[in-house]
Image 1 (tube, rainbow, N blue to C red):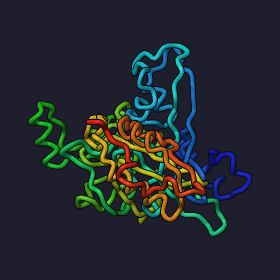
Image 2: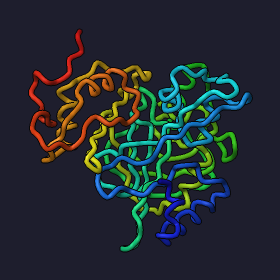
Image 3: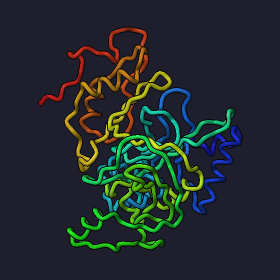
Image 4: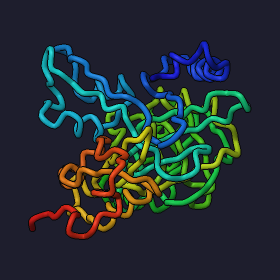
Length: 335
């Protein structure tokens, strides 16, 4: 359920939506959700039908979905000419990584940012989520904990010497100073962190079609309208946690969900499943609960690795299958 349905129950939700509206652009659909009382699955999927003038990437931007996400959810739809009336799935369910729900959390292989606004004691806890572009191979976005130390409207980009050398070597020289404006690769709004000596920012872009791909020099990029909405509500000092979690599981309302992403920098090609790792992640999500698990579905999901959360088990009263299934019960690749 989107947070818009909660406005009558929470003054905080209304204040948050008002603050987001300060960006002067409409809030991306489904970007703000209430946090569940237990578990970490949020959001909901949608189905729309394309118009003749649509591209799949244009639809993705309209619903604040990234390049990889829209392709994975619609593998048989043409990226540039989906055609009139084509059924398009808008992936809107996400599993939050197992870290404290505080400040900003970025999951690199999921190409997704989660923001947990501070709230009053009686306010409904919410999460805002947006697609992002992390660093490309060789310019990896650092993993770890940092914080927002400065908010920079209309930033001027001063490329590092290593970036200047890389562009020159590739035959694509760039200016030593890139002035603020619509052509600036940092976009119109930027949040500076402490990582890499202050060189890692969360910012906008002048190339929105690439959002959802690993294409940056280590920074985290958002759609222009998404960073414009996020910028005014994130205070200086906000903690930032960056993780690399391609496999996520959560037990929520008696149901066990799993999502599997391709590894970062794999060109979205699924890795050979490591079922020992997958089983440990599932067991951590289950904890002491007794859960009947569909290991055949786990195997299929792990091989497909499209990032979409799926139901893989339910709490059970018997001990026939649990998260700590014996090795013989674990799925096998057959290769």
